Length: 117
Image (cartoon, rainbow, N blue to C red; front, side, top):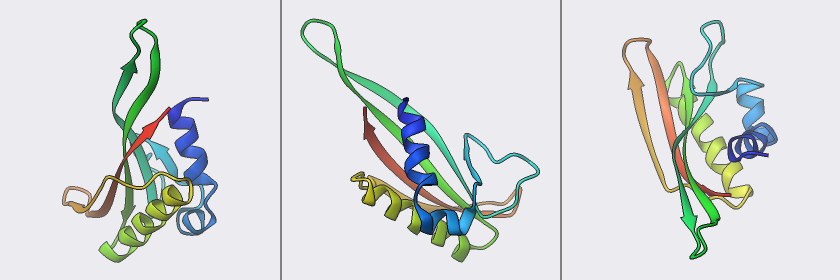
């Protein structure tokens, strides 16, 4: 499995999160025909840790996971569930902040993590 598929499994397997977004957990972008709230995850970086023999010991993936909603409250609820799902899997978040996309009128709650694989 890949780090992205492992991350997806953690998010999709967390009942409090799926109670909010159902199956609306997407890589990179929300498809146009999908309702909110939803989750979008993307890989921001993948940095391998090299051994002296030039083999990769592990890779640190930097993921950005965004809970989107039509209100700040709904986006924050999704962000809270994302953070809880990750913590339950033993992956505490590194950073968290909110945002607003004025072009589409959607609120965001952003959770950033480092995932070792």
